Image 1 (cartoon, rainbow, N blue to C red):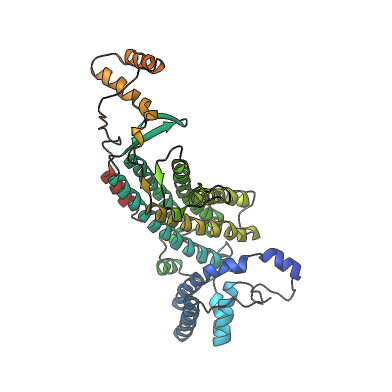
Image 2: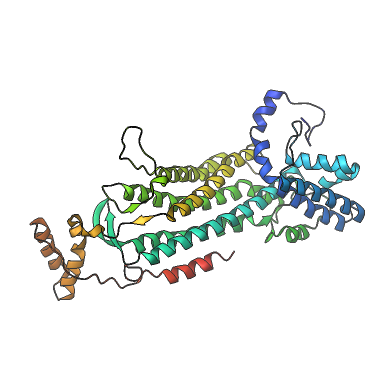
Length: 429
C-alpha cells in the first residue's frame, strides 16, 4: 500500500489490516473536506511565495476536478492507497507531476486530518440543528393543538396530578432548547482552525494561519500548535455530548410513547402500518419504531463515554488511537440523524385519546385540586390535606370543581410563544 510516510520499509499485511481497520471506509466522509482544506492551504502557500500563481491555478483546477468526482460519486480510494489524503495528493501528482507534490508543504497529515474532521463536524452539527428545529416545530404545533386535552400526570409511575397533551408535547419542545445550547457549545469547540499546527509544533515556513482561518470559515485559529493537536478527542467528545443530550430527550419521549401505546394506558395510537404484530398473538400492535428509537438513542449516549475512555491516559501529541474516534462518532451521528427524522415522521401520524379522564380510575388525580380549593376557601393547608386524605381512604372522595392552573408553565399557561423565542435565540449560531 502506498503511504505518505513510507521510507522504504513495508508493513506486513497483518499489521496493516490491524492498524487501518475501517478507516478507509470512514475516510470517504472526509473526502469533500480534504479538498476544501487543501484549496485554502494552497492559496495561503501562494501568498507566502511557496507556490507560483500558475501552480496555484493548476492545483486549484485539479482539486476542483476531484471535488466534482466526489460530488458525482465517482471518486475512488484505490486499493493500494492508504487514505483519502494520500489519494488526493496522488491524483494531483499523476495529473500535474511535481507540482502535485508541493501541496503538502507546510502541513502534516495530523493537522490535515484535524481540519477535515472539524469541517465535517461543523456541517454535521448544522444538519442536526436543522433537524432539531424541525422536530421542535412539530412538537410545538401538537402542543398548541392539544393544549386543552387533559391526560394523567405520573410520579413514581403512580397517578399523580392532571397534565395535558399540550404540556407533554410542549415539555419535549422546551427540552430541545437545552439540547440546542449543547449543540452550540460543541460547535464553538469545533469551530477553530488547526491548520498550520503541522504535527503539533508548527514549522519554519512563514504560514499565514489567519488567512486559512478566514478562507475555511473558522471563528479563530487554535493558536497554540500543541493545543491544536490536543483538540483531537476533545472536539469529538464535545459533539458526542451534544448529540447525546438530544438522544436523551428522544429516548425519554420514545419511552413515554411505548408506555402510552400500551392498551392499559391507551393514551396514544398509531396506524397499523407503523406498528408490528406477533407471530402467534393476532391482537398485538407493538411499538417497534419507538423501541428502536429508544435503543438507538442509548447507543448514541454511549459514544461520549467511549471517546472519554479512548482518549484518557495519553500524553499530549498525536497517538494512533485517535484514528478510532471516527469508528465511535461517525456511526453515532448517523443514528442521531435517523432518530430525529423518525421521531418527526411518527409524530405526523400520532392520534391522542381525548377522553382518558372519563375513566373513574383517574378520579384521585384531582386530590391536590380539592386540597387547594379548600385552602383558597380558608382552610389551613395541613387541615385540608388531612381531610382529603381521609376521604380518599374511606372511598368518599369526589371532585366536581374546575381546574385553575394559570401560572407560568402550567396546564392553562404553557408559554409556547416564550419557548419559541428561546429556541429562536438558541439556534442563532
